[in-house]
Length: 623
Image (tube, rainbow, N blue to C red; front, side):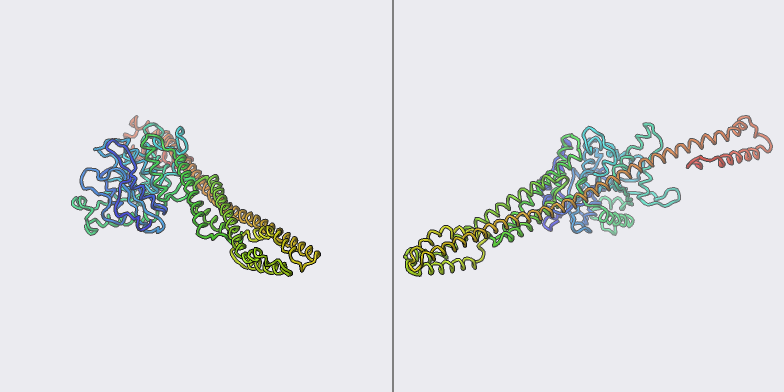
């Protein structure tokens, strides 16, 4: 981001009215359009009054910025934007979006919360979900917004439901931020990482009944929608006084565990949050202008109550960007040609070389910006550039003609004066005329920057003066009739040679133009083919990721069924092996001296038989 577009403080990007109507703030859109760098978009979402804004201020490298409230009221309304220079990726801009708190009791509109959550996902390259306490079943119920996404978003069609793997291509990476975390990161006696804590919390509950499905739904959505998942846990920052004044609190006043967690968190975001990309378009990075277009589209669609169809959004964005790519490349070609070409050029090669360079630069600009299937836009750019070049070629010829005619008029001025005064009407006059004419032609040839029509205009000029030459020959009484015929034949032969030279020059010009166009076409096609190869490779990688996701899902299902079958078989086997023991207990057969010893022996035999029985499965020790 250019220094003059750096924002010192956040500004409202999406307004959320009291009635729940969403609208884009044009001032923020204009700021985004001024950023020509790729964006890393980090969006935070979560319940109101959970400290979301404080974390974004830390990421911005500022103590103040996004409003941090110290009361029970939500401090953020709508979606706020803060563009900052990226601390690690100097060629990227870090875009921080702070969203209105979900579940605000003053608002009481669940559908509006669902829309805000959907916008947070659609706009981000990394989504931060902020909550307090622990990741328990209540926390998973609180993130129920993720289960409502298919009511707002589709990937390919408004009528067909999309699968998790389809969303994964479009959705951001996911980070669950747990605030005021007081538990030990352990499962049993084993220490675990915060990421492992999240994955353990997202384990599915066995069972296919409706209750189990409802229980598992938020977990399944998080597992299958987001391509990567991470977790960070934070201690409480300090006591109530610190919490109420956290914007002005010094680092020394905060709990050191909290400070360390903040530093680790910021380092992770700076390092791992990727630039936002356009899916199915060779993973082209999103710039500020493209992001502004996306924000406007998403808000318009979601605000109107229509479904967001992601493929159509990408198609719409691609059309808009390709249109701009054509115009930008065409303008660049025109500006460069205007700066570099000085008409007339001495040769066609000179103009062709300038054209090739400008064409190459313009095509590179087009490719840099073009998205998706851009073949028809490439063809349009080629046609536009061809038209401009043909106009330059025509003007080059006209300028050359004009300059050559003016030069010949000037060089033959003295000859014309002599003709008017009959200075050549004497014996030896024709020889004098030829000398003067040859001197003028020599001066014409030695004069530079006549352009591509120099030979043709000379040929036409001398052809127009052949009658004049004939008259002077006839008036020269020092020439015999035979000499006159010989001189006429020489002049005719010279004119034919000029005609041939002019034709050869014209053919050479056509050949050079064709060769130049062929070189440009081949070079541009090579670039296009390279991009297509990269796009195909990206598509193969995408398919591979989807296949791996499918395989993982199938494997997890098999693993789950394997465990269920193992449990079932083990329980049935133990019931069968302990049947005799249960009968003895029912009939009080062990209620006698030595009965306990007999019971232990029977139980040991049953357990031995259980252990010796094969194919009990992976859960054989659970019962």
